Length: 142
Image (tube, one colour):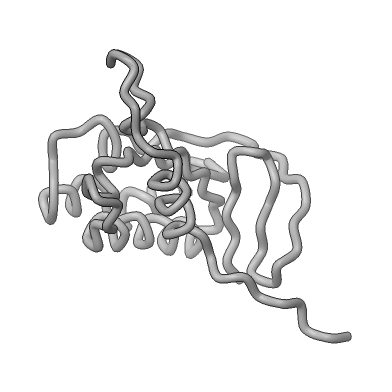
């Protein structure tokens, strides 16, 4: 069962149901897919399955994974497949070690903590969010 936690504090399960979730002790996986100058394969060894296993051994129940728009998509809204592989690895490893994952779309091209206001079309952002979405599954009868 796939389990992801969204920023709204709801749990999305692989069966399409959602419910409130309480996060306990978590840690941040910073500067991997956010606020880094690393690109491509250079990002892959920064955090490994061994690191995720160690975090779980320490008693954490979730990790926060910040991602930046420019790390995940190019200027035209095309996915960076390596970045998505890395993100999916982090999710898979965390679930294997019984931790939840909080994905934080941290820095957008239209919103940056230190930037002058930038203007990007909203339809581009809608496409970016849709490219992250999990396919909807209808609940099984019964």
